[in-house]
Length: 71
Image (cartoon, rainbow, N blue to C red):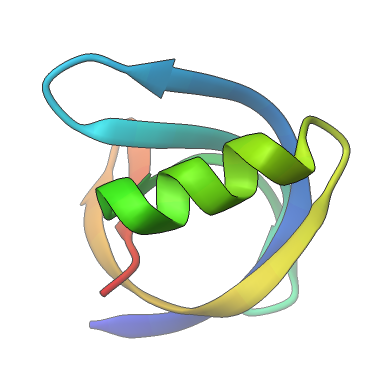
């Protein structure tokens, strides 16, 4: 299911998958969530740094913990 998200990047995690921790909202409701992104997108966001605003549409992977995948 695709959802609209927006928020501010608060941390980066690069293990098996490239993950970005975001504090913001999903479909207008306040949320803190993990955004799984491609390696290229991860590198772009890493270059921009913590505190960068991000928004878009992503697929909800999990509710607990809240995880979205940006395709």
